[in-house]
Amino acid sequence: MTARHELTRNQALVFDALAKAESPLSAYTILDRLRDDGFRAPLQVYRALEKLLDYGMVHRLESLNAFVACAHPHCGEHGLIAFAICEKCGQVSEFSDTVIEQQVSDWTGRNGFKPSKTTVEIRGTCANCLNG
Amino acid sequence: MTARHELTRNQALVFDALAKAESPLSAYTILDRLRDDGFRAPLQVYRALEKLLDYGMVHRLESLNAFVACAHPHCGEHGLIAFAICEKCGQVSEFSDTVIEQQVSDWTGRNGFKPSKTTVEIRGTCANCLNG
DNA sequence: AACTGGTATGTTATCTTATTACATAAGTTG
DNA sequence: CAACTTATGTAATAAGATAACATACCAGTT
Ligand SMILES: [Zn+2]
Ligand SMILES: [Zn+2]
Ligand SMILES: [Zn+2]
Ligand SMILES: [Zn+2]
Image 1 (tube, rainbow over the protein chains, first blue to last red):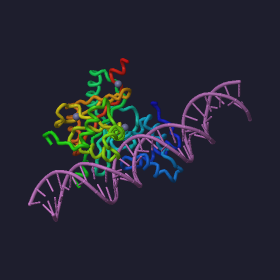
Image 2 (image 1 turned 90 degrees about the vertical axis):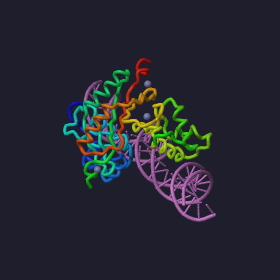
Image 3 (image 1 turned 180 degrees about the horizontal axis):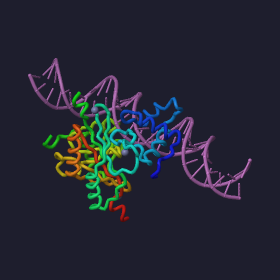
Image 4 (image 1 turned 90 degrees about the horizontal axis):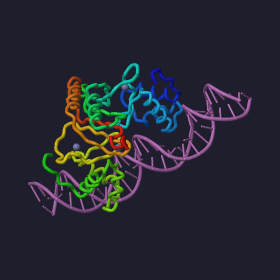
């Protein structure tokens, strides 16, 4: 889990597709981009994504039903991550926020809630698009 | 926007279905529950939901593709809202958090990002289900 | 090499969620 | 009433995700 993961061919193809992309991709867009590499069915993409999500190399954007490669260079453990998603250009910024993490932790502690995954997604317009 | 909204028949039916429900409902589940009231097509639900979301009377849970009635008694303006979603029993707790709101506001301010909507969803297991 | 268990793949069909397109009805204003 | 806006009804289709089943591949063992 800590060391770099050996990816299978399909996993590597899916990860590369996401890493190359300028913005989040839906599973079906990934599928289309990998037709030439022999991809035929959605499941090939979803299965690869499942592993990549496990490994923390890819994140799912719940409000978009789409996926992005992790922005951190050495995709290790990260705490709570937040995404700012531009609705104009599609660009996504990934950042960690320990204050939000603490705040979530406070609430769950007070309420006896055991968190498994927390989603923070800010939709809006990025600086570039505002100055366009 | 501030006053209570006059709901159309369809909107009222959809809102009631959500208000009665013990946990979030998908659009298609709402449709099924409103068959006897004359609902036939998904669009009838989605159109009502669109308005109810506008009015702030209903929230969408992005990580579930489902909807809940707002938990606040007099559904007025609320700031940033967060949801804790139990994956065992489906119960959802809605709460506001000004600290997270401030933190989001700080980030967007620093980065020239103009936010339109922020999603905070904590998935996990609720106290009830843990003590079961 | 043959056996075994675990993981990865390929393929088809199906299910769930959401939207497009087009026609009709109902309210509102001048 | 005419013009306009908003709400509805219905069918078809798009987009996202999973179920089921068959194969293949890759250790480790006998
Ligand atoms: Zn990351
Ligand atoms: Zn942008
Ligand atoms: Zn609310
Ligand atoms: Zn629970």
